Image 1 (cartoon, rainbow, N blue to C red):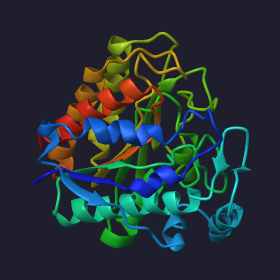
Image 2 (tube, rainbow, N blue to C red):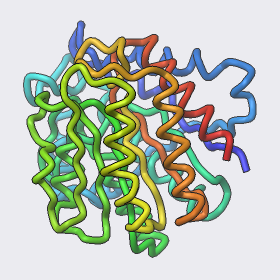
Image 3 (tube, one colour):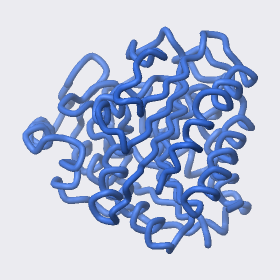
Image 4 (cartoon, rainbow, N blue to C red):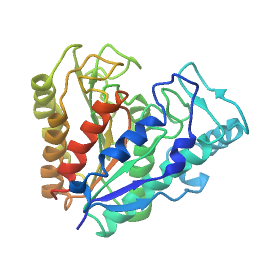
Length: 308
């Protein structure tokens, strides 16, 4: 079965203030890279706008309504120093949620073994009732909650290799023993969470990386802390918060991964998925702010997914 690839041109409509690192050009760099002939076998689809109620799978309805009310008809509305909405942000956010849902449908029904969604805004910093860190809705949390609600998936895993800790995902599932959250991330760094001692209900596995860490330390953290625990958890679905800002080229952090590291971790997650959940993986774009590093990391990641 082909890898499902979902994106939408209207995700460019989320355009925070000029100079913002989470800019529309990020998607354009990915699109250009995935136009290469070696990606011809991808099953390509446009995302479909989700109903706002879908975001309430991971957030209170009052919060979803508040984000809708903040959406401007013109200009930019700042939510915090890092997070803003433009006139196209509300539609882009619902397209991201729609892509997450569609990828779960495809993977859980057996239509596709795995899926990658090139979407924005990203999501893993969005807490239960708080937008932050460029994020409005937590797409990975919504994907996991949707798989549970729609398909009866009992054990969900979210693996996050973005260079920033996914405080929002951790917050949403802090007390949920049936959702595994595993994260590698630079520490200290924004948002300041992600210490090893943060374990929730025994379902949270953080593996902080020291500034300056490279491939060896990243792979060791995955092999020694995250992957064995994930194997033992035996998930019904693996959701990846796929951030590429741990790339050595990225300007917002100091971790030195190469393109091939993203292919390596993708392959290792695929091995566990093959053994535990019939290969089912849903991958959702998070960070990555150097366009060359982002495109190269995505290409390695998607190229590996296509080997399923």
